[in-house]
Image (cartoon, rainbow, N blue to C red):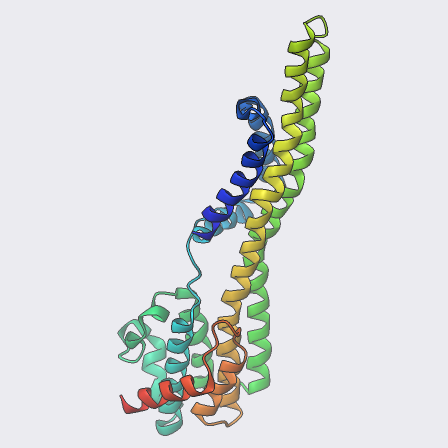
Length: 286
């Protein structure tokens, strides 16, 4: 929703200001300029990226139109789930959670946390490292190193669409200049026409430069920035899981290990110490 609101503000400010100056909006409607700039941008995007990057970019765009799913409610579910699993493992041994980890869909514990169960990436990350902990063949240092590498890989893959879109956005002003030059060439070839017609042709040519800059900084560039923010948000979940599991491996009690995980969250979604304590108390009661 914010994407549409932002685009509406950009269009309203630019075209509204132009209209208030007495400009004619019809003069800015140049389909051929859009064709040249948009077609060149799409073509450069296809040339400059492989199939993997193109598919990743296309998959990354639709979620940007929705709000972020990484809310306080999801983090509260995550920390409650981690507490329950670690408490069960501490009380009955790591093998007690093996069945839950091997088949989360059939687990009565995981089924209580629907927000997490719907996110396959979080579930895969969590169950993979719980499975390694159950095996008992890796120490905390080895698991931490492996987690760091996986999170780094995830961020690299997640930021790939942002880099692809950013490069296209950076090229838009240049493609706008190309369209403008083509318009100037057309104008020079029509030098025998009346001055009024030549003025209209020059105005059409200048619209190309305008459109290129507007598309770059008003539409495409912000999308790349938004993708980077979403990747940072999603990787924060993995960091929370990482810190909590490592604290448990180092011998801290489940309630304290979950507190470690709470501290790495962004302040906008991080529950307070009292909120987390009350939530853990309620989980204990259940």
